[in-house]
Length: 298
Image (cartoon, rainbow, N blue to C red):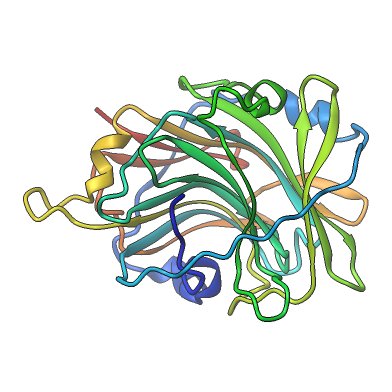
């Protein structure tokens, strides 16, 4: 399993000045090649079951890596009760571990949430899905509270929770992170079960988020890389050739309402070591702002 510095990305304040950072990737519009119907159909689907939690404590990296992130960030005062989106995943995409690199694409966390749902790449075997717990028990550190190894053919995860992605050659899952109790700041992460047409609770956590900017909310592409001195690119970059990462129909939840992400309630920001030490990557918005694509060219 790949590792993640608990002091980075969400725990840092790098996105406060993100829009002013230098070397930000170009953001361009692309034709709406996505399908929002899965979100629209599932919004009113029932919740069935109780989320189970498990703790897994990960050590922080000994050596810092180049870190960059780009994606949609909700404006202050919006998405206070959750977010929902369709995320693509490539179960067999391996980016290697010999240089400690990790890729979180997409990764989603609503403002003040205890849970971040992350499609994690950082091992040769392929992808994992993490429920990153930002509200760990006393004495513990933030880390994956629950995970699934998506490359495991014996795991029913793919048949239950994914469909073929509407674009690219990967799979896609529908994920929701929702606050269920404001007084205790309790959050549930749920996955839409395509076999039963209901939301299956996957992980729950409550308390005070242990990061420096808990009020930030995002749906983003995030990379930790090590530069190959022979090429000047991150070692991970070659693995992303012709691979398309999508977050589709991002919805912001507030009370009993949900709205699509727009330029009025959110912004696309970039921060860190742009352009990600991977010049093949392009960063695009689609579907009138509420979807994004990061594409690794040839």
